[in-house]
Image 1 (spheres, helix red, strand yellow):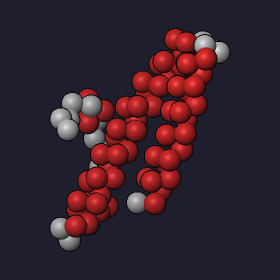
Image 2 (spheres, rainbow, N blue to C red; image 1 turned 90 degrees about the horizontal axis):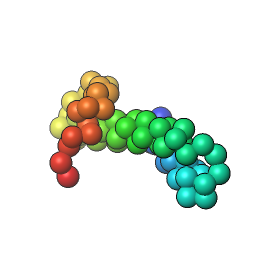
Image 3 (cartoon, helix red, strand yellow; image 1 turned 120 degrees about the vertical axis):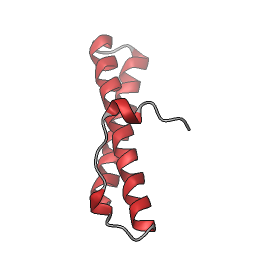
Length: 79
């Protein structure tokens, strides 16, 4: 789980940097927007994986059974 949390932290930092680039207009906006969209999808998948692992552990199941779900699945969750 620590690896997932570390990866999320790095991705959040990357997301912040991309948003700053877009805000100040430095760089190729289309490239940054594309990268930001991909990063947001990957972040959603990581958060979903982390929630799965925690839920499995809470019910006494093996957290290692959690699997990365397709972005098309996790992008459509309702909060």
